[in-house]
Image (cartoon, rainbow, N blue to C red):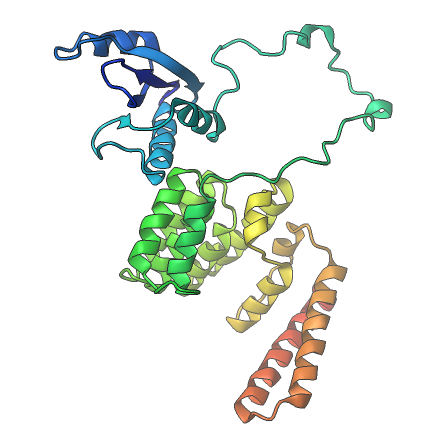
Amino acid sequence: MTNNRGYIYVLANSAMPDLVKVGKTTRSPAERAAELSKVTGVPTPFIVVYEQLVDDCTAAEQFVHTMLQQKGYRESDNREFFRAPVSEVIQIIIKMPNAQSSNSDFEEDEDAEFFSNEPDDELDEFVLHDEDEEQPDYPWLALWEMAEHYYDGDDDYIQDYEEAMKLYKQAIKLGCLLAYKKIGDMYLYGFGVSESDKKALDWYKEGVKKGNYYCYTNMAEVFWRGDKTDNFHKCLKLYFKNTKEQPNEMIEGFYYFVCATYIIRCFQWDMTPLAEVIEESCENKRSIILSLTRSIEGAKKLLVVSQDTHEIENFGEYIELHQKALKWVEENL
């Protein structure tokens, strides 16, 4: 893997009032400032206003530039100059994902050498809990929500897949994992783009690499469409495994998938569910039975009051499918 550790810097120049230059370097920001100051036509030198060490300076620069552009601060599309308050630029850099907590390569905790690493179960309960801790502030949330509006065409928005795609990609630059799945969906179903299982799979795979394990559920659908049943089950198994071993509140907060859905989908697609897939889930047999039972009871109540022949037929198929899934759970789990 390429080492892209470096700095994000903010430079100012007295000859350019109200403008700051935001860029990246794998060297010292002071060296970069000196280098730029030597350029003919710059009457006064650049000074380093702020610098931040990061693991991936290219990704960090892209994040900061996108945030500043969204706020309307970019002076020119092909330049690194922004007409923005220095304090606001610094706050964006401080809050960006994966920023190093210190500009030094040394450990920040000076007291570490005085504390034992030995665990003590009796003391585990004596910890501070911040009850007033704020909910995560996702810098991409506004872009994501706007993209969703254009995708669905809800409220006062006119459905526009092209605009949605553009906004999803901008949200990704700000660290939005959810957008990988939505772009994959657009290619999977041909929403605003040419339908392509391959491109859909590419986006889902990238989403998984970045940490959006929910993309596994859509990868499963791609493999089902291609009659790759082994990969279908494997993807769902990996999804359940990740929800248990590496739960991500951001992902779970926007998407939800349960074992019952997997079992039903298998029967719906004329496949036999695999018990070992369910074993990777954090759900137990009782919760799956409860979920299926409630769905059956709810459908039966609606079936009683329905007067529509087509609707009655659909409810009947729904109940039959869930009863089949329930029987399988009772016999195999």
